[in-house]
Image 1 (cartoon, rainbow, N blue to C red):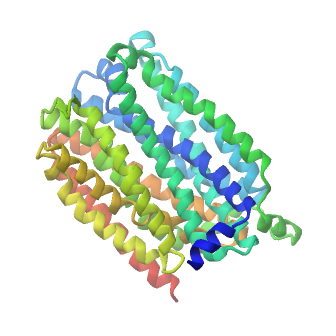
Image 2 (tube, rainbow, N blue to C red):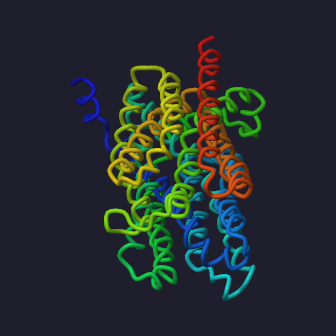
Image 3 (tube, rainbow, N blue to C red):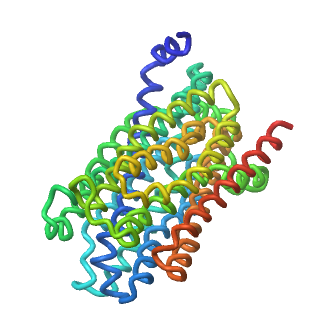
Length: 445
């Protein structure tokens, strides 16, 4: 009751900041995961299979094109972290959306391989690199902005809950991407979807990003950052300084949380679609195309089990150490990584949907606690840089798993190597669990 009363008492500026930061992050995740959906289907057919005749190689290169944005994200975190800790959180978060807008427009308008040849693949790569740089500066800035506005207004005891709400925007962006892609492929004629249907999804995202940028521009700067300026506490090279002083903490945080995104881009998208349609040979499920059913199951599970798990973990982080929640989440994810593909192999739609629900609950069990955890461990003078670098280095680890290790597994062992993909996810979960335990010990000293 006390917590619910405190939540309703939060001033409008806090809610507006959460909305502004969350909306932009949602659209970045929408763009990021829309590309994941496209990589295993549309991009494969329109760009990579015509260019590379061997199916395994074509899929591997499509995955690499998608995953390249993960690899470049730490550079974006470094660049925008430096700007955000020197110039301001709000201004920097508008710049990140400008890059996201450019990337979405490029992906939406890229001609096919049959039209301009290899240049089409180059344009896709460039657009992914642009998004990766902008995305790299997004999350750390949003989490920092929310945290500092809350602390300045005396609501630090609810930082975990509102951080969880912020993470729900990211979760919603991921779910909306899969939902929009699956519904568009299901409800529009095949030829139209492969010519313009999938492109419209990117262009709609680009239009909404302009609205998000305007909302951010109209809000106030972080009060804690303004106070830092008045005290002359702004560092000359904050992004470098956080590495010099806090490199152990940054790296441990990266390893502790990256299992969360690895589930999505290693185990689920695009491999689970390929596994169900090409390995199991399923064409239809519950009266719809099998690939549409898988994408829809993922989106529904994310919007239900994933969102609920995110909010609960954020709320719990106000009462318990967020690292404990990460330990539980990584352990549960390791268990589900063993069970996921055997459950899909039943071919029973109800069991398959249940598998997605359980996987999303375990995956997002620690997601809501991340904003409070990351911003708590770094001071104002390099909070943007520290939070962003730790988060995006985790994204880099995910990119290496999905863009390097997973393609090697598929090109070497073939589409049917689900057991190797499962083993990879179990290994990632164990690494995250161990890192959380080490970080728990380091930060408790």
